[in-house]
Amino acid sequence: MSKIFSVRYLLIGISIIFIFIMLILPLYVIINEAFHNGFSPYFNVISDKFTLHALSLTLLATGTAVLCNTIFGLFAAWALTRFQYRHSKLLTTLIDIPFTISPVIAGLIFSLTFGRIGWTQPILNFFHIKIVFAVTGIILVTIFVTLPFIARTIMPVLHSRGTQEEEAAALMGASGLTIFRRITFPHIKWALLYGIILCTARAMGEFGAVSVISGHLRGKTDTLPLLIEILYNDFKMTDAFAVSTILVVLAIILLVLKNIVEYKWHQVKE
Amino acid sequence: MIKFTKKNNHRVSIIPGFNLSLGITIFYISFIILIPLISIAVVTNGITWQKFTSVILDSRVIASYRISFICALTAAAVNCFFGTILAWVLVRYEFPGKDLIDGLIELPFAIPTAVAGISLAALYSPTGLIGQFLAPIGIKIAYSPIGISMALIFVTIPFVVRTVEPVLKNIDPVFEEAAYTLGAGKFTIFRRIILPELIPALLLGGGLAFARAVGEYGSVIFIAGNMPFKSEIVPLLIMIKLQQFNYTEATSIAIVMLLFSFLIMFAINSLQIYQQRLIRGGR
Image (cartoon, rainbow over all chains, first blue to last red; front, side, top):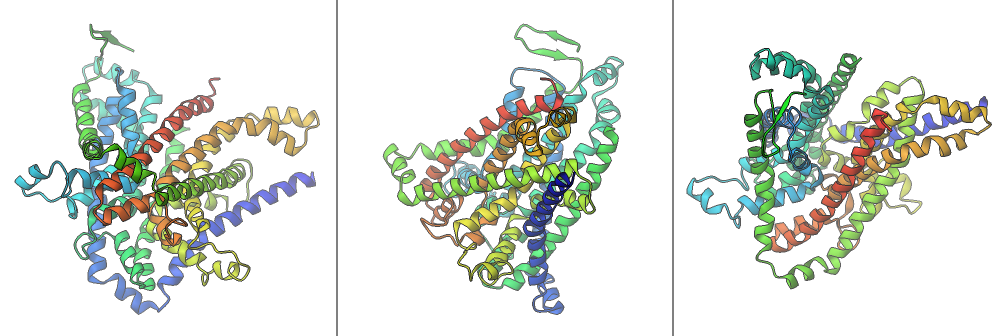
């Protein structure tokens, strides 16, 4: 028996050391470096004009992306799981594309489409719309990168439930909205919340795609992750880590929420 | 299921909202995904085949493919190893702090990649918390391919753990008990009974981790050092070309990467279908 116990402790030990080195130490480093010069410089950095502007832009892009993708996710999940038709597989595969594309390529395709050399340029010029190197572009790529999250978390839940309940309700004369509100929504409530949390986390931290499209106009098109890069490359390490703490706090809040939602969701399942 | 078959093999369901929801879905996908993707074709139209091959076969580009590929593969392999241990520990054992570890697994998905990047660079630089112990014995992590792998391991930790976990939960302990009573050791039981069950999940989790790692940018650039031929990854090379407004070269390199990504995606999709069948137990 003692041999089994030693394997158990060995494996638990490896897990704890791995988590400690890979996850906890990096977090510790961020906090440690951020307060390197004490509290008062820290608060100066995070209440700086540029930091607050970057924070508001990050929140704007994240909020818009999550809102758009939630609406899309609900419609897509409805279209792809409540009905059977020939090309539903194809559409599902298309939704997954942003997951497989490197964020840098995501940024690239948007600048090829809407940028200076883009083929949509005449149309955009006509309406005086600026997308690349502007806030609109940042929001668009954030939407692109986080598009699959919500749709792909709701879809398996709806898929496994089948369509009988909705069909019964429809036969009894319920309208689409009533069916969704009274039957579908209660089932997908936790999955939807879970997807929204994942989507938010990814949207607020998106770096590669936003970096291509933003043009780094400081105080104009800088989100928090981009501001961190600029500060870091200017050798303002402490400032970069101070700005990072804002995102770390948001990340930890999201992580806790994710775990709560997961727990509740699990309870409902059982 | 109630449905009627029309002439064109299009089934009509009694559930309302088909046209509306499908319309919105197709419109949204076209606008956000397809139109930007098509631009690649529009730009490529202006590139001659010679130009294209000379760009993608340039020695610096080839070196970056190799670095991206090897580092991503290393990260996926390391995560397959530790991910299996983590999943095993989380499913099979009870110990204080287990819930904390379970809750922390998704931290890399929550932490923005740029933040992870600067934090890892600080941790492993020769003066950093871990780097200062490794530098005297000649191990250089930051500003080398090992650093790239380190960053990629960090961002892809959750994939393997979360794909192996449900399969492990589903394995009936009866088989292990039978093997044990027949005199098999712990290691034999793992190798002969558990591992074969886990292999599809490991391939899937490892594949997802690999796919993510190949395209990863934010967390890598701070720790990589970004020296051409040594520690320059493909996404960074695309970025450099873009900053020089060299759109044709950037697009050419991106096309190779896109094709590669689609290939991985195809493999993962097939595996996913297989994995779903395993979890549901319908074998």
